[in-house]
Structures are given as structure tokens and as C-alpha cells.
Amino acid sequence: MAGETALQITIKAFAGESGPIKNALENLEIAELRFVAAYNKNITNHDDNTEAVSADATKKYKDAQIDLGLAIKNQAERLARDSSFRGHGLKNCADVRQWEKKILDQVATPDLKSRLARAVHENEGLRATHELIVLSQTTKPLNADQIKEGRHIIADATGGVIGRREGEEDQEVTRNQLNRLETLLKTITTREDSAGQVQKFDRGLYNELTENIKAQMGHLDPNDNRRFEELVTEYRPA
Image (cartoon, rainbow, N blue to C red):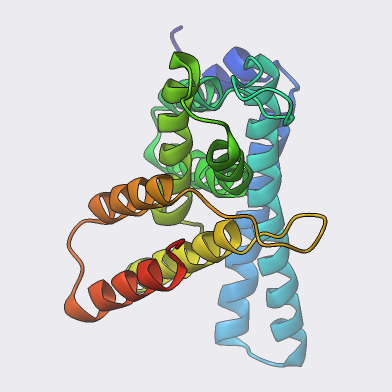
């Protein structure tokens, strides 16, 4: 519709005129302006007060990014079917990813799309751990729906590891990706049951997951590649 901004289209398509995505985006824009102002003032007129104000503005900016992620999550999950992996309280990963993509596809402005994409990557990382554990523990062979959803679960985990986050500088990206990889691998391979026994993670799924992450990360310098391989080896199930 002529004259409508990408933000207005997104709001109408997914959140309503006064919906949570609209509110979260507006709050994020305000938080960003305050963050930039506080940061600049702290640089040019630094003292204990400007330091405290800048730290508070930084926290509120990060909280606003989280709130946007939650707004997207809630809307996407509301529209998604239940998972093909029954009994675990999951929504269908393929559906959730489809609705997240629809939200991103409505946005023409690069800056706004980047904000939404960063929020989506946070969501992927948050839900991937539970999804992977459920996929690992499900009795094989999987049915056709579970195989399809399983591919999307691996895609979730991959996006959660490699997806760029709010405030990451270019030189920090690979280091942060490797840190997120370590957190993911440690979590899925050291999870204990109610009796305190470590629940074995499916080795084939582990290999498929780590191979996909490696492929999507692209070329790594020798040091980063060595760390990647060390992490994969350290946490690989027996």
C-alpha cells in the first residue's frame, strides 16, 4: 500500500495496530537513541555519573532487544502448529521459522531488518538446546514429519551459533560464534536426568550438527579452525 513504511506493514501483518511487535520496536528505537546519547556524552564528558548513565542505557538497550525477540517469539509460536515431537511442549520448528521469515520479508529497511534478524538469531539460540535434546532422545527411526522438522532444528541451532548479535564488532564475530558453539555443545552433551545421570546425546546428530555449523561459518583462520575442531572433539559423545 502506497505511503506505508516497512514498520507499518510489519505491524499490520503480524502484530496489529497496537501489538507487541510494534511496541517492542518503538521501545528499541527509543532505547537505541538514549544509548547513543549516553555513550557519546560519556566519551566527551566522562565522569562517574556519565559512566553510570551510560551503563544503565546500555542495559536498557539490550533489554529492549530481548523484548523484541520475545514479541517475535510469542507471535510466531501463536501461529505455529504443535511440534511433530509430541509431549515436550514444543511448537513446530519449521512453522516458527517460516513465520519469523515472513516477518523479516515484510521489512524493506536494512536497519530495521537487521534488528529483527538479530532478535530472531537470539530466539534460535534460546530454543535450539531443548529442540536438539528432544530430537536426540526420540526413538528412531523418525517419521517423515520428524525428519523434516529435525532439519529445521539443526538450522535453528546453526543460526543460534553463527547469527550476528546486537553490538558485535567485525573482529568479535568469529570469537563470539565459537563461544556460543562451546556453550551449545557443552549443554547438550552434559545434561543430567533427574537421577543425576548424564543423558547421552546422539553421536550421529552431533556430527551432522557440527558439520553444518562448520560449513555455514565458512573459512576460518588456522587458530579459529583449531579451536573449532578442539571443541567438537572435546564434547563429541562416545
